[in-house]
Length: 476
Image (cartoon, rainbow, N blue to C red; front, side, top):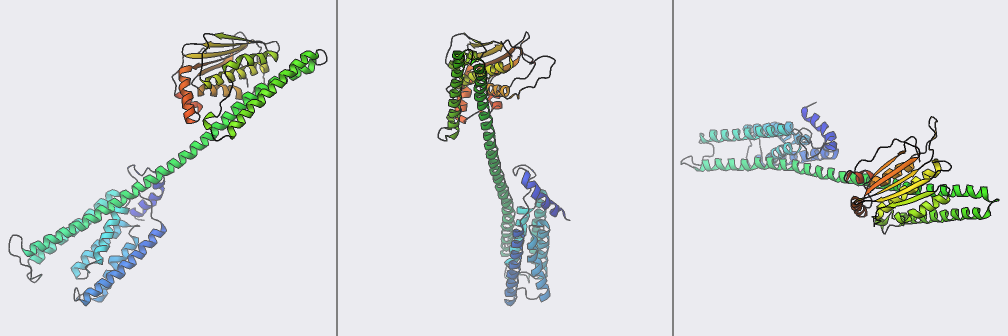
């Protein structure tokens, strides 16, 4: 196997993965159809060369050579072009030797042999995989042709029988002018073959680069679409968890209380049933809003918007109190308007924290909800005095989806959150939101249609580190 064959075999693999604009790129191997086309081109050029030589011999031009030599020369000058793209360097060297040898033996034509040599040199520049070797092969062929041309002109200048009508007298004699014309014609001829071969290589490289960039863009669109679907699924799962977990757990507690006191205190049971009805209506309303935004294609930037926010924290605390877990609400600082994304995030985190308190804090637990307004931030803190998981036992932890959802929500608006058991009992959820940065994230979310949690966190300045609390158990 020749080096050229090995290079061409590597081309198919490298051209699929290597950057076409990077050094060392190799042009892809020609297709089977390209090889078949080369065979037809070689056959047609052989037929044209044979016709040209026949007409030249009939016109008494180069008529002294034997027929068998003419046939051999025609086949040798044209048929190697059938493999010009498979072995470009070897093909060019063979045709160059046959071209020169035929001229020395008096077997040549005035048209098609030059076309064959031109195509051979052009193919080296357009298809040779080893670019350094391509330069040297063409340089050797062109230099050899000029050496042969100069030698032929010098020899003919000393033979008066060669072109006797051209005088050799004078500084620039007619023969010297003829020689300079031949040099100029060959200079243009070989320069064109060299230049257009390199141009074909560059064009193929640019086309491959364009195809590669187009494929990259198509792959990026697919990745972006898949990422968007994944993020949307996470958002839907988070919203469903917040809505369903809170309201269903609340209805479960109220239904249990109503069942126990139905016979003893019908009025109190009616209050519990009223709370169940209210929770059910609220859950249905939020689910209806969520499903409506999912079905709507007209206003995608409104997706995920909710009427819930900081103003509904008191209502949330009242629901939790009616469910059997008293909640004290404290507002520290001067209340002010905050971005809607932050308001919804504060509400959902408080909702999830109080839901976990009802599920895990135990009987008789109370909760404290504090909202602090600072100069450039807002902080939510939800604590309880429940018993939490029993030390030394192997409790069955929750799935952790609630805590994961809280972390994702906080990260999406550039905040920080702390979750863990308090040293003296109970559980703490503390979330801090930089309001200025959150506003910037909210604007970006409206423009981009949503920010991945990881990006939302990385785009914003780092907040002061809050005290680290080591959790003793997992709350869902």
